Image (tube, rainbow, N blue to C red; front, side):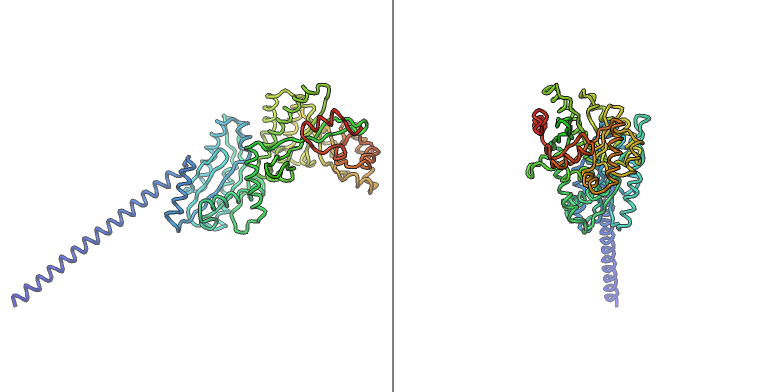
Amino acid sequence: MHSLLMSRLNLDKGTMIFFIVLIIAATVALLVLLFRSILKERNKWAEDKSQKFVESSQAFEDFIKRKIQLNKKAVFTLFRLDINDYKGLIRSFGEEQYNNALSVFISNISLVSENIRINRQSQETLILYLKGKLSVKNLNHICHMILNQTQKSILIAGALKLDFDVNIGVASYPESGKSLDELRQNLHLTLVAAKRRGVNQFAIYDKNLSVKESKEYKSYLEIKNAIENKEFTLYYQPIVDLGNMEVLGAETLLRWNHKVRGVLPPSKFLNILEHTGDINWVGFWAMEQLIKQINQWKIQYPDRNLFFSMNFSPKQLMNPSLPEEMRRILKRHKIDTNKIYLEIADFDMFNMVNEVKNNLDKMRQLGFRIAIDNYALEFSSLNKLNTISIDMIKLNRNFIQKTQENDMCREIMKMLVNYTREKNIALVAEGIETLDALEYIKKLGIQIGQGYYFAKPGNPKELMNAVVLTPWQ
């Protein structure tokens, strides 16, 4: 009996010790797991916190790579935000004021969400990171919230207002790409798609993005390189006195001297420049090159007094920094601006867009002359001429056929010829390609023209050969 009791006591004691050890081991394991969890969360919090306004693009890229490599189940969205014509803003307000405004701009965007992380990649580009899975509806909502923040005017230097125009491309991991390179490429693709839609627009990556957009993306990259490598050049097409066939001036035309495809006309690249906003930078460059060339010609041909015209796009005309940048160019180069015409293709912009009217008024104050390009033969447009100040009208190339086929068009043409003579406005017929067309235009009373009949657009040397030789006499 005694031995049985002792055996049972020993058994209970052993069991108790076993359970105590088991409890201690479980507690230790639980504490280890809890400690690891706390450490992991602490490191994660520290990492995320450090990335909120990271300045180093490489550090931000490493952060994204770790998200992809260490957690295959990671879900997040990147927003690429590009500032349109940031170089023009820097030229207008100065780099220091621009950077100060950009800091406020970034702070405004951070208000969209406490979870958003912002990386300033350059003076032009921001990358925004937002973790978690988001529906297309939510992404649309966030993009609108970001745009609302970016449209806030920023006060600088105590009085001046700086406004940012942006475009946003959106791509999510892993739907939009399973590697950083693929994600980055699709992010750029959506940005190009956004710029095709206009200023202050966004695009969210979709597998159905058109092949056209992919092609435009490649063209976009090519043009970016062309700008950096200074591959753009200017060509000139003579404008001729139809009475004595003397060259009076020339229209200045932008060309892309492509390394592989040769010299390309604007139809191959102008649309991309418009959507990306680079048309502003290229336009200022073109005007400065024209002024330099005119001054060089004055030295070589002091007895020739030519005028020159250059087309300005709607985006250029709405650029708030246009007059100031032109003023800067004129400070660097002395030039008689009275011999330079700014061609405006969209006639209705004179009265419909206040920014355009204000810019053109300031350009006239700087001495530039204003021309209407591709003017159409309509009674309504004839009546509008009295509401604006212009110096030249360049007729739509289709007008010849219309006046030949339609009595009303001939009457409008007579009225236009008389009107321009009374107001001392130069009237130019474009697109003259044959001798018959030339003779018909002269019968209509038009005294100035340009077209392939005289010369195709050419380089400066070819224009001067035409000026000196006047081979059409």
